[in-house]
Image (cartoon, rainbow, N blue to C red; front, side):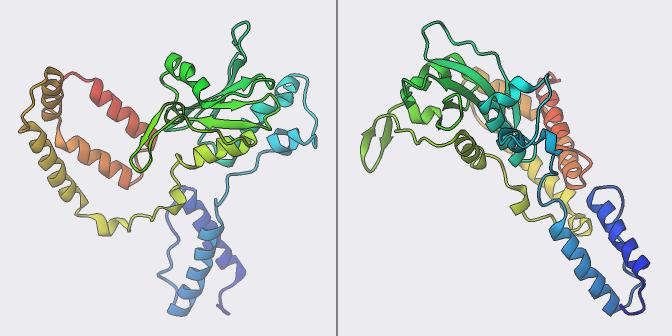
Length: 297
C-alpha cells in the first residue's frame, strides 16, 4: 500500500459506496497485487460494516424525540400534533424501525359515555395496530378489546394508552379470550403488562417485523446459475401434486383448478427477479395479487 496514493484509495472507497447504494458495480481489484488486494479488501469490509447500519437521522426540527423533549420549537401548523404524546410516541417507534411502520392519526370517535377513543393506526407489513385512548379513571382489561376486534376484524392488535402515553399495553385477540393450556387447563384472559407506549408498541413490532440484517446474504450470482432449473423442477412437482389431489368441497376444487392452470415459468421468473434484485418486494406482492385476480383460462 506504500505505492498506492490516497486519491486511488479514495476512488475505491467512492466506487464501493456507490455500489452499496445500488448505483454501480463493485470496485474491480484485479489490477492490484495480492498484498494490495488484501489491504483494500479489509478496508471495504469495514465500510460494509459501517454503512447503513441505522436509518438516516431526520432533521433536528423534525425529530419526534427532540420535539417531545422541547429541544426544538414547532411551527403553528403542526403545534397540535407535536403536543399529542400518543402520536409522538408512535412516530418514535416508526422512526426506530426505519420506516417499516406507517403511522396514521385518525379522528377521535369515542361514543358519548364511552371510556375509549381511537387515536392512532400503526401499520407494518404484517401488523395493523389500533392505539386506543382510555379514561385514566378506568383502567381497561384485555376483555375490553373484544368488541374492538369484532368491529374491526382486520386488526392484529389493540394498544390501550392513556393520553400522555406513559401507561400502555398491547392486546392481541389471544389475550382477550379464554385459553386452553395443556399443562394447566383453562385460563382466563391475560393480565396486561403496563409500560410506556413506546416500549409496548416497540416490543410488539419487534416480534413481528423481520430482522433482515440478521439474514445471511445469498451467494454470488455465478453460484446460482442452476437455480432456475432447480426452481422449475420444484414448482412443477408441487403443481403436479396439487393437480392430482382429490378434493370434495366445491371451493377446494375451484382452488385446485386455478392452481393447475398456472404457468410454472411465472414462478421461476419471480424467483429470478428476487435473486437478481430486479423485482422489489412491493412489485412481487403486486404481481402475485394480479395473478390471483386473473381468471383461469
